[in-house]
Image 1 (cartoon, rainbow, N blue to C red):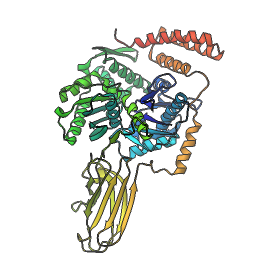
Image 2 (image 1 turned 180 degrees about the vertical axis):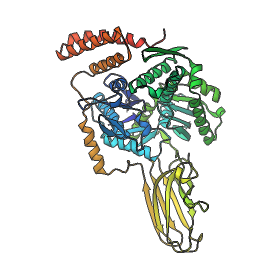
Image 3 (image 1 turned 90 degrees about the vertical axis):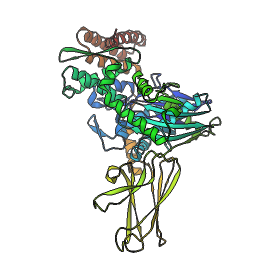
Image 4 (image 1 turned 90 degrees about the horizontal axis):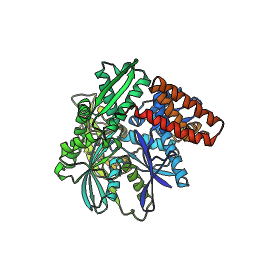
Length: 563
């Protein structure tokens, strides 16, 4: 069975195409959204999702979130005394989604199509593929998140021909794509993005604003207090989708601190974030050749796009009201599921065609005579070129009687090659000639799977060289991948008992730390009672007590809301 997976910064989802439609797959709690959070318990067990998210406050040093932002980087996360790469943590999330899907579908999941931000470079895509391998999932195809959103939208829309601007705003990344849809063909015209801009940044900006208003240095707060404040900021942000004013309050150093938030305040405290959003949107439009008036629909995708202030901002910027076709939280996963169906050659959708583009310029470094230590970027395939594509450029020798030429291959938009991503190099022997007389042809062929084939040929001899650069993983051998798979298996994700028990206790422990006084006493008593009925395996008493404690915790959660 092949499924589609939206591996998100904040939440992840799985979807399968069956019975002529994309069907989202629920997790063990009946929710489609699985928080992309991983936490390690004292006994060495790992928990993923909703339970782990509760532990962000109670056990911040053993819990990690938002690791997707560091995919493809050397960043390490130290949890429970051990270090993990972002792709290893992502593998825990993927494994959980795989297990949930197999339980729901009643059959093995062997392959997945995983969505990635359109602006992910080769290293980040390679890290995503590696995460799939470690999780025991075969991943041949990655699909860009806006492409997946456009695919799902095209199937829900009644129009046969549209130009979309897909605004994909998640917890950690922003992607903007201009999409042309006609005759079952979805053509990505241009993409732009910011891999470090998302809803999490709004949460941090609100938390920083809260501290600034009370003359507090946010970095002076303990990790638990910072995690609590950011969680409360996230809640306040979400409440602004339905309320005009929200009270954000928190006890710090024995004093209750509070501010009132509304959309006007949000614009002020997050002004730099909106400036960055505007830059990305205008970049995508400029590269597409379209003007705002040419856009038929602005499609919102990603959970952070649900903020009313975002719709208001886009309306003012582009002069058109954005629309939500389906749920922004789910549309990318649905598109990934549909793409998995296309890949599996499902009868109803096998004729749909999704074209994609090269998100970054690909080229080689050329000699800079004014600065011998630096090389300039010589583009061969420009960004936003439709894939697959093949392009050739001719170069020459720099020195007299030069016998070899080395081409470094780069990905990026900077003029100075040092500021771009180096994918590797290729060296060819050439016929010795005076400077600028040799002819060396370099051909780049790039396909939708991110595979770059570089052919180099000496124009005056039969010397040829070829190199293949593809997103296969972070240069790990098959042996190293196997070792990581075995390491992952050591961390059991299952545990005895009901998952609902563990989630309830994790929520209670988090609220215990956030509240004070008599409320803490009530929560402590409830936790003791609940742990007792679990230990004696009194299912009837546990069922009744669970309902009572859930109602009590819900009331405590409302303590943070505005009346």
